[in-house]
Structures are given as structure tokens and as C-alpha cells.
Length: 126
Image (cartoon, rainbow, N blue to C red; front, side, top):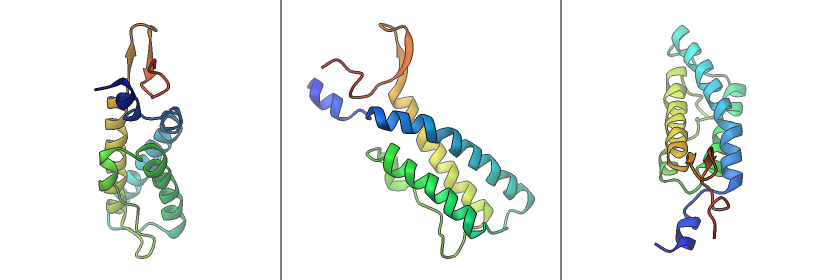
């Protein structure tokens, strides 16, 4: 495979930066919704929570996982019918799995630089 083709398949620096920003927020949101679910599994999320969660999920879907194959399987929370806590845990868990897979694919140790780095199009020498 030509180097240019390889570079075009790598995430951008912005995607890596967005990952670093959004993943901790996703973890925190998932932890909170799991707590709600433990207390009342069939409880319904309120509209404000759905709006906040969907804003986070939209950023992840559109800015980080844009070209990742997992993107086709990621849905937002339904703000019309308002999801149950257990449904939100399932959806957030799918996002978490997709984000972990993304990092495993594009983040690694660079022995030449002696550090862990994102393998982005800009980090590969042209």
C-alpha cells in the first residue's frame, strides 16, 4: 500500500485531540447512567439528560468516529420517547466499546520517539 493511502486511513490530529477530550466525559456519563440504572432500571431519563448525552454522543460520532466502521452501529438516544436507564446504558456502552477499539487501533508506542502517541496522518513522515 502506498504511503499516501496509508496516511488517508489514519485519523487526523483533531480526531485524536477530540478523543482525548471526549472519552473521559463518556466514561463519566456511562458511570452515572449505570448508577441510575442500578437504582431504577426501568426509570426514564429526563429530557435534559437525553439532550446532554446526545450532544456528547453526536460529537463522538461525527468528530472522532466519522470514518470508523463502528459508526454505522452507533445510535443516539431517542429524545422523542425518552429511553429507559437500561437502554441508555446499552447505547453508551456501545460508544465506549467503539472508542476503546479506535484507541487500540490508532494509539501506540513509538520506539523511535520513545513515547506513546496517536498515529495520525500528521505523525507519519511523508
